[in-house]
Amino acid sequence: MNICSALLKIKEMSIPRLVRNGTEESVVLDCVYSLDKIDDKNLVVKWFFNDDPEPIYQFIAEFGLRHASSRLKGRINLNYTVNNNDPLIKYRALNLLRPTVDLSGRYQCHVQSLYSQDSKEGSMIIYATPKDIEFSYKAVTRKEFSAALRKHKTTHTATDNTDTSDSYSNDEQHYSSSASELLCKVSEVYPIPELTIYRVAPDGSNPRSLDIYRPNQSNQQTSTGAYNSSVSVYINDRHLIETYGNEASIFECLVVFNEINHEMRKRIQYFPVYAL
Image 1 (spheres, rainbow, N blue to C red):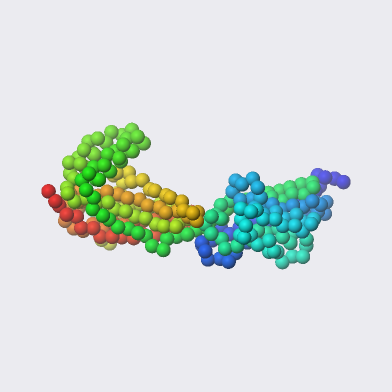
Image 2: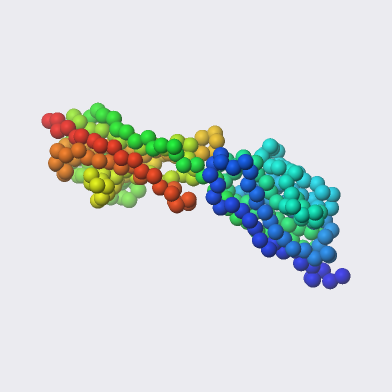
């Protein structure tokens, strides 16, 4: 028997790249392999998820046995077949039921026999976009505004060693009794988006990012595996009036999901008040 001639090879992996959260009854991840008769004995197909060393699904061809990890109890259909009566490939595919964002990640198919083995992996994103963007503003006190300036000054200096004491001092001196916090947030989303707040012209042109205070985005993972993401920026009415005049300012929150090539935006109108 020439063991070197044994050939067990994965020819193709079929994994959906993008699936919208909560819209499918099931999805199929398939692993198409070829094998010589010499490889028939002890054929085992294993599916792995992310970095878990334990397989989430296992098919032992010799006995027709299928086993799903307790981690995904009720999420894998053990009776799914690839419409083929060949006992060596009949149960090779992974059929995930009611896919949700927590099943996003890397999947690896590992096939082995008595004499050879092969493996391939691919990724699937189960995405969730927000039903709406919550974008609003609220008035802040002088104490809150000054505290925000000091906080961002510390962060700014620590990250790039730039001395911004003069600019922040000027901001505090220009503080009027009218200042506000712009807050943009989205809930139960996946993957994590990028949130940016801009000031735009009435026709939507000439976007200017409000990054003078280096706003930090917050991302909190929920029990479903999705995220609640938000970003806030403090604005000074006197600065707006001195820069743009007494006209209303239009602010836009842009939400970008880079992995799925999707973006959303929402605008609000803000009227600054010059209070001495």
